[in-house]
Image 1 (tube, rainbow, N blue to C red):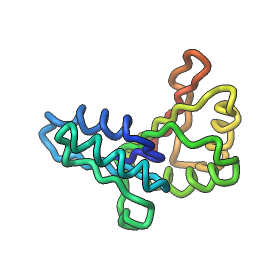
Image 2 (image 1 turned 120 degrees about the vertical axis):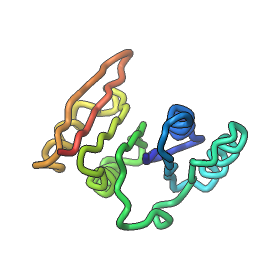
Image 3 (image 1 turned 90 degrees about the horizontal axis):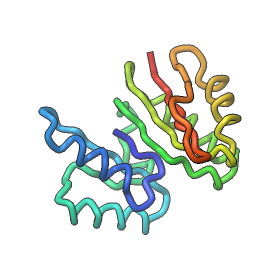
Image 4 (image 1 turned 30 degrees about the horizontal axis):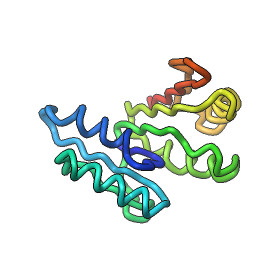
Length: 144
């Protein structure tokens, strides 16, 4: 599982806690560019006894690694160009049958982002809005 833009780690922590009783080992890669975010995520994982979370920068993730799931509240405020680069780099690394869930504020462009994802990812991916509440959208990307 990839937590894209992990911040202090709430998505990574939830994923690791949810998988704690799974019969298979689930590794959670908590990716961020901010070293303080990575340190905080590591401390929070340690506090909860979660050894499956790996707080990392992009260059620490093996190039051949694919993810069964990607979860993110993407950093919209980095700007459209940087956001598009981030998503076009990591979403294609979904494994076949994988799923990504993005939580995006409607006021910060969730609907236009959905259109961009459909156009950019193309064949082999589906992009649908699977939820909407209190000004937020959940965009789900499935890889065939």
